[in-house]
Structure formats: structure tokens, C-alpha cells
Length: 234
Image 1 (cartoon, rainbow, N blue to C red):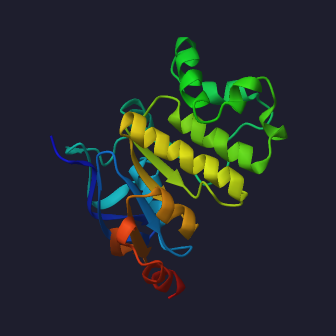
Image 2 (cartoon, one colour; image 1 turned 30 degrees about the vertical axis):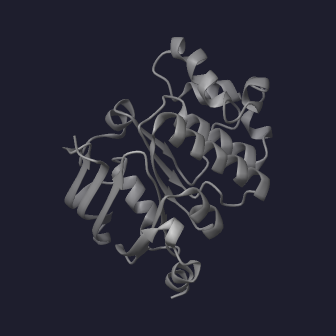
């Protein structure tokens, strides 16, 4: 069995006639949290959407546990252990917290176990299952999005800008939840982030994307904050 949970080699994808990803090469080890950073418009979200099968690949390969998965639809990826927390708020505002969480499951019989799992990190959800999602604060909705991605206990989590617009106390709760998932289940996490302090605190390694390519990376414990800042300021 390969040591990499996710292996990306020469990945090309984009929109219309424009290639956004210009041959991305990246590997995520089992049980590792990798923070992917870069300025807006560099291709980070496009990468996650391509990995989730929402954008078609035009070149290169994607492998999970050494198995090629490029071209697989989102439903197949979700059923095979990939969870996705997108940047936008993909929540039904008029539905309850319970009903929004149920959307992650194939069968209602799985709901009690799934709720027990997410309540370890966000216990407030169980106390407010009947509350309409639209009445939650922005930070609470972010925690709900992450909870829904965690519902089926995926082996790989793809997370896009989860800390955006969120107050520091909620960011700390999210960081604790990600570390707990890593420690309890050995989940692998690809974390797209703009919040440098949060990213370097929670991740094991960092990488920077510019114009659709990975240009640098390293271990967070040895990372120079200034090195990353220099990349993000250019």
C-alpha cells in the first residue's frame, strides 16, 4: 500500500478554453494535514473542485491510495471516503440543521452514529437539530458545513477556506476538530487556506500555489512564516 493517500501528477484543468491548473504536482500522505496557500485566483479552489470531479481533468493523473480516480463523479468519490467542505455556503437555509446533515447520508439509519461522531467536535449541533439553518451565525454555518463533510467519517477531507470571515474563537474550534479527526481516525486533510496563522498551526506541511502550479512547500514545524508571506505578497 502506498504511503500517499492522494497523489496528483501533472494535473491540468480549467474552464472553457482557459487552463487554470498548469500541471499541478502534489502528494498528501496518510494521516497528514497539508495546508495549500496562495493569493486569490491562483487555482486553489479549482484544484479542489477538480479533485471532487466537479471540473473535468484535461491532463495528468489523480490517485487515491495508488488507484487512478480522475474522471470519477462526485457521488463515487463521496461513497469511497472523500469528504468535501466547499468555500461557498452549500446549505439549505430554510431546512433544519438535522435535514442539512442528513443530506450527507445515504440512509437515515446511519444518522444516529453520524450525529454522535460530529457531536464530539461540535456538540451544539445536537442541542439545536430542529433549528433552521438560516438562523445560524456565519461561524456556526461554517461548523455545520465541516460537520456535514465529516458525517460519513471520510478518509480524505478537502476543505476550502473554512476560516474565512469567522471569528477567532470559532477558528480555534475548527482547528481542534481537524486535529481530533487526524488523531482519532488518521484522516488525511487537504486544507486550502488564506489564514496563515491557522494554516501553519493546524497543518503538518504547507504548499504555495501560484498561477496553477505548486511553487514551494515544507514542514510547518520548520516553516519560516516570512517565507510563506513572501510568496503570498508577490
